[in-house]
Length: 209
Image (cartoon, rainbow, N blue to C red; front, side, top):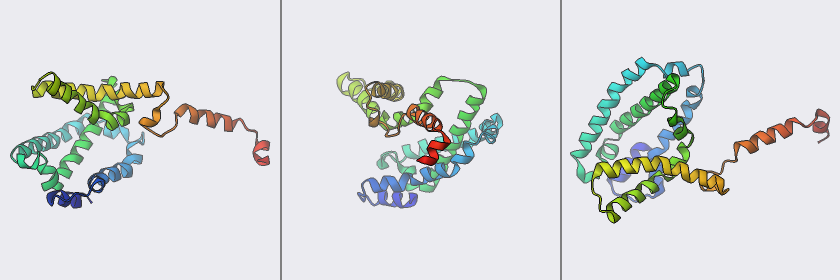
């Protein structure tokens, strides 16, 4: 699927959302396949290893440098040369990055450091859903309205806004009772109350029902 999406891109075929499904399905599949293993508390001691973090840091750094330099040398591909013209190399770089970030997260959790990242982690879905819109809005305001063209300022402002504004928007959505904008999942409190109420039913009533 992933390789097929690369071929579609190279041939300039407009497949719509099908291209996205083909391109990103492998990451969802791997995440779903490994989720039970990664979330098992017995295995978390291995993922939080500082030695493993340093070991992964080397291929992670090398992959990022290669990705940057290779794309800069092929600007005609809209800086996506590695992703769509070297799909298997990109896949290796992407998966290495995933492993590094997961290892770093477990390590920080083990050291009880940077607790504010936990807040971002709990709101990662809402950040994922709306960060592109927020980043684009900030870029337009800075570049078109304020005339700022400094890449560092635009990038830094966009990243900070793309992380914080979605969290604020989600909390406003909860306050105004419109959580469905971000997720169709019911509130945890409702699930807990249902479990409590069901457990309060006597065995006799359950048999009668």
